[in-house]
Image 1: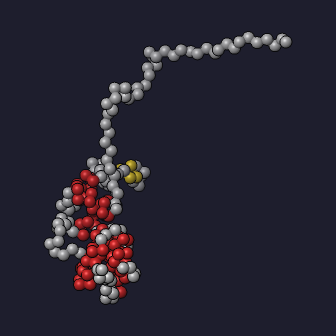
Image 2: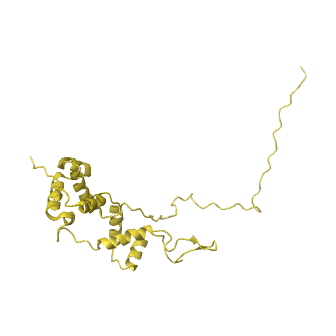
Image 3: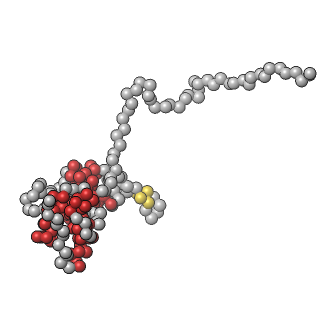
Amino acid sequence: MPKLLFARPPVDAVEERRIRKLAGARHAPADWIRRAQVIALSWDGLRVPAIAAALGCSPKAVRYRLARFAADGLDGLGDRPGAGRRPRIGQDQRSQLIALVASPPPGRLVRDGAGELVAADAAGPAVWTLDALTAAARAGGIDIARSQVRRILLAEGVRWRRPRSWAASADPEFGPKEPGSWSTTSTRRRTPRSSPPTSSAR
């Protein structure tokens, strides 16, 4: 039977506050949030199997994270140097990307002081799409690919607008409705039906 491990007690109130704040965060790296949740749940008295079930991971991963935290403290929530693929952008740049999504697109129309609809940049996007976010991030100095923008937004639970693609129907009977021509279209005037004669005499 594997040895049951628990997270070591926090060294002070500051460490505990930082771990619990990160465990409940919404705009932080998803892997850091999950690892902080491991520690917080262990502090709350849950054992390894219960933590693994609550977070949807393996007991081995929970025990590894508890051991890392015992050895390295807050630094144990991160990956060891050289482990896995190195991220192309740092946490500061991730935060800039999340803040970009929360900001209004430069091409969105807003009313000015005179009540007129104007855009900060008429040539800019009116809604945030992955392509628009990637371009804006690169313009802001973040070297990032479209696929990585998508992964980051999915990990952070952030929504964006998916562009719609409009296409013409291949159905030969499908076509745009055209208004009828008043000069050529004749309308047949309906005459009321004559009701059968009735006799009131009995």
